[in-house]
Image (cartoon, rainbow, N blue to C red; front, side):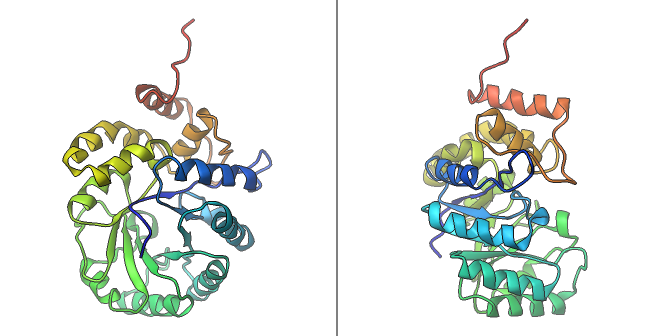
Length: 284
């Protein structure tokens, strides 16, 4: 796979009526690819995939594939294998370069069920499939032992590892950090990179972490407050707020996500000011 190392899980911009704002999405793809992003994940968790219709989802992938000028990884997971396969087929036809497939959430399948699920997913596409292991959201954790078994399925080529402990390279799988605060650890382990949120704001610095390993620890330490501010409440609430404050038309959120409260907004503002991304508010 030639997906790069700094992969941004892009937000989905909405207009004031809550509709997908395609012009803003195109503008954001171009901003990200000119500020450190090697590739983009479209319609993932950060892109509020849970609230997108399939038509919106596939249209966003097609738009990014036409306009972004970089590899596009389409999120196409579901807790229903038939739906996941249909969505995988659709984003493949829309031009995705790879597919990100989350473990089936809520139903919590057992080991045999997970294997069968991913066997079916790989039959639905001729593009590389990245597993997405995010137990905090799905209730299912793919153990390293099971990851090694899934790596034997033809077509599965990587994993976005969004657990915070027991992160390890797996033979046959490219390893990507699924959390900003494990990006350095994954790179130090020899991983391929990360599927990141902070790269919306500090993509060039995160790109330096890949290409300047001698400065990696220093850069990571300097970005810890960015990671913390973007985790002050549920993703993507803080990053959408930050983008809007910086003049990008990220728009609002779809329920059940709601806007940041006063304390959350102040945490994001303080971080942006600390990194010279936003001017401090004038004092009265």
